[in-house]
Image (tube, rainbow, N blue to C red; front, side, top):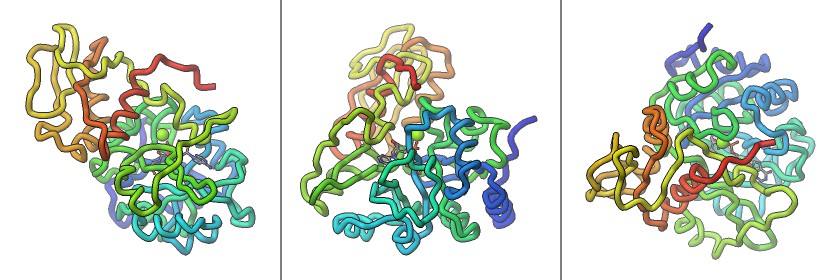
Length: 321
Ligand code: TXA
Ligand code: MG
């Protein structure tokens, strides 16, 4: 049996809301990547989500809510969080804030932490699903743990197949890279995961961000070094390509050779490169090549998140226990 896929119309979104209310799993589009959603207050549903993704239970989920008022019912807002939410919500920013216990969020969803990660997505289909279901939706990226995130419905179908109850197809994700995860320590914002909103646009609002401190467990386990593994090895900062390699290019000057070349952005545009990143890695990986050479990508703005994902994809595999 294959996964049930529906195009994102009113009927499909209503069905999705009903499935969530019954404790089911629905994959849906967001502006960053596709998410795999469950009712965040339903512990059984959250447990099934962890099992389907084979996600370590120490890795907390992002809770998606409809608007700022709904977010305030779930967490206490830091003054800087107010300002960031005002500027970037709805959108690709996740805020890690002290949890209000009486909000009823399943303990498993935030891995029993004192904090909870919240995001108000801007994608119209995600928004309609949140409005119709009237739920807080716990939704990690809709990929098996440790694999690259899906930016097309077909990626979700291929990765998770019949393990989910419904997949809503609404075309490619516009941004193509996950949300920026920001926490707070004292009077500072802490960038926990680089993402679709660059440090360069966050810092004018928050002032300089602090570096995350690592305790016994990563404060954002998405920081596990090999979190985004394709099958092929990645060779970064490549300025040439050998006959056996595939090439992930960037910019107008592409070295010749290679079994296959895809260009993240021929006009060297970082937003375009982010939107293409995961889909192009998947495509080159599927060609069966053993090595993907990746051209250098500037580290400013969105380039920070792109290089972060590439470095993790290139890192030696770690067991995800
Ligand atoms: O763009 C996105 O953020 C996508 C879409 C679907 O919204 N979601 C996503 O979720 O990327 P996921 O589960 O793949 O990544 C969530 C990240 C992880 O790095 C997790 O460790 C971190 O958020 N996180 C969640 N709760 C946290 C918390 N209480 N403290 C610190 N980090 C947290
Ligand atoms: Mg993920």
